[in-house]
Amino acid sequence: MQNHDILYEPGEARFYFYEEKQGLWLAKTEDALKTMLSGELGDYWRKFHDSQKVELLPQRTDRMLKDSINQLRGAAEHENAFERSGSKPVIHLKEGMLDLESLTLNEFAPEYFSRNQIPIPFREDAECPRFLNELLAPALSDEAIAVLQKYFGMCILGYNYSQQFLLLEGTAGGGKGTLTDILRNIVGVMNVAEMRTHQLNERFELAAFFDKTLLIGSDVPGNFLQRAGAETLKKLTGHDLIEAEFKGTNKRGRMKGVFNAVITSNNRLRVRLDGDAEAWRRRMILVRFTNPPVVKKIVNFAGHLLDEEGSGILNWMIHGAALALTEFHEHGKIVVPESLQKDADELLYESNTLNNFLDERLVPSPGGDVTTIELQNAYVNYCNSQNLPAQDSRSVATRLADLIPEKFVEGSFLT
Image 1 (spheres, rainbow, N blue to C red):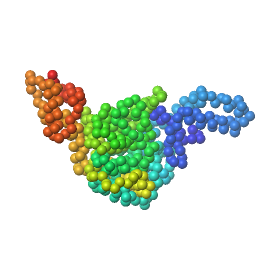
Image 2: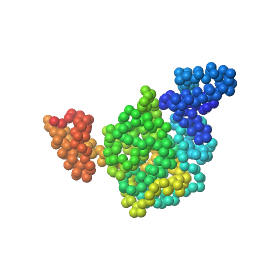
Image 3: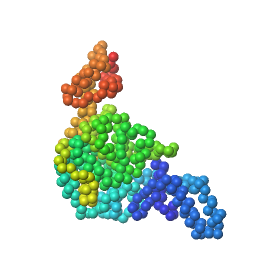
Image 4: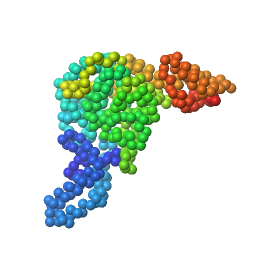
C-alpha cells in the first residue's frame, strides 16, 4: 500500500489499483496481487537482505501470500468507493477530467475514483457536420435529436442521473445501428455490456455489468421487454441496490443500478407492465425512426464518421451532458417533448391490451359466469376492433386468473 494506490471494495469483493497515466482504477484479481507481492518481496529481500535471500525467497509460499492478501482486504477496505451520487459531474477524457460545472479540464487524480475513460481524443474546436446532416437530420425531427443529444451526453457521463432509458424503434436501415455503434465506441467498448432481458434473472448475468456504465440491447425482437427479467431494467436504471453472483466462485457482489441503457429494434416493442405502467412511463424515452432509409448506403458509415468526426461527435455529446444536467436539476429528469411522449404513451397503451379489455368490456353480474374460452375470444375481437396486437392465448389465460380477482371485488367469474 506504500508502493501503490490500492483499495478493496467489499460490496464488489474486488481489489482495485490506481493507474496514474490514465487516471483509472483498474480491477485486480487475487492471483495477480499474489504475483505482484511475490515479485516485490523478492526485489526487497535481494536489495536489503542479499545475504539471507537463499533462506528468505522460499518463504513466498502460496499460503503466506494468500494470508497477506487476506490482511490487505481490511487495510485497504473502501466501501462505496465508486459511488458518484454526491460527487461533481465529470467526464473522464483521454486528456484529463472535464468538470461540467466549471467547464475546466483538470489533471487525473485518484480522488475521482473513475473506472471508465472515454477513448476518443478531445478537441475543443472539433465539429461533426456529417454526423448531424447525413445521419441524424434525414431520420429524426429536431425535437428527437435534442433528446438524443441529452441522453447520449448522460452516457458519456457514465451515470444515469435521470433514471431513464432510451428506446430507438422503427425503420430498418434508418440509422439506429449506425447511431448505437458510434455511441458504443465513444463511450468505449470496454465500458459497455450487452443486455439480454431473458437472461437478467439468471444467476451470473448481472456480474458482467460490474465496471460498466452503458447497457445496450441491439436489434432486439418485439417481445424483448415482455420477457421474464425485463422488469430488472427498471432496477438497473433506477438506482436500486442489486446483488450479483460471480461464476466459478462463491462470492456475491453488490452494485447500484445507475446504468444508462439504450435499446434498438426494427419492431414495434411491447412492455410487460405487470400493473406498473406509470413506473415504465417515468423511465422510458421512445424515439421512433419513421422516415424511409437512405437510398445510397455507405458501408461502415459509423467507422467513417468516427475517423473523420469522432472528436466533434464527442463535443456534441459533452454539450448534451451539460443540457441534461441542467434539466435534471430543474425537473429531476430529461424532459421529453409532447411529440415523443405521445409515442411512448401509445406503446404503453398497446402493451396494456388485456387490462384495457377488462376495463372496457367486462362488468360484474351477480350469479353469472363466463368461461376462459369466451373471454379469450372476446379479447381477440376487442384487439381486432382496436387494430392492436393480441397476446397469445396461454398468456391471456394465465393473466386473466390474476387480473379478474384484482379488478372485481366480488371475485372471479371464470369457469
